[in-house]
Image (cartoon, rainbow over all chains, first blue to last red; front, top):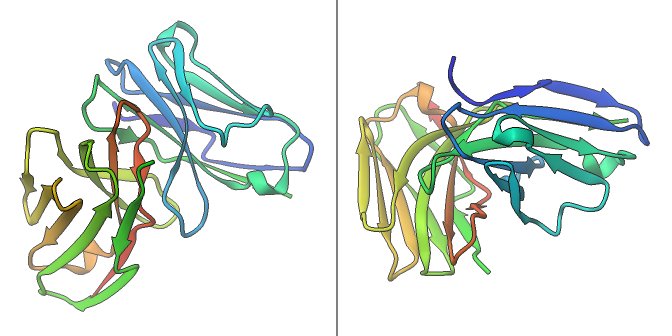
Length: 112
Length: 112
């Protein structure tokens, strides 16, 4: 399967713990995006990478959130000191230049 | 700031019916308009991408159109099937940002 891959698919964590998600984009795609989706809402943009450079960040991305894309390949999204409000589906997408986005299956985070 | 609205929020139709889903956006400087399908608990599947110079795209039973002057896009589904039941999301980007802005989606149920 050469689509966008996200791991883990599900994560349950206690409030205050740190979590990290991984996204492997489609191999030739130079752009990578993170989104967050809560129940009944459309996905909300978090951040965007072109190759290894993080070029755009949403105000939704508080200082507890950090994303990296070392070497312009896979990306990680870390949430520190998780809160119940962080519970959501975290979606990763990739694209080639300004062509359409291709999304992964998402990581569902539950903070208890 | 780009805002995307989808009407109706939910739609239930009998199998075989042709239907139209509507999407409106506030900023006519939209560059790409993309339609997605989302099954419960899953990621997004790209259906159709209408790029800046295009006015419509077709794939099988699906046809999407884009009218920038009126700020509207429609997704037409012909001869609907129970397997088409899902949430349909439209999203637009433009104005110099890589931020793809989503509507809240239309939940479609096709009854056998």
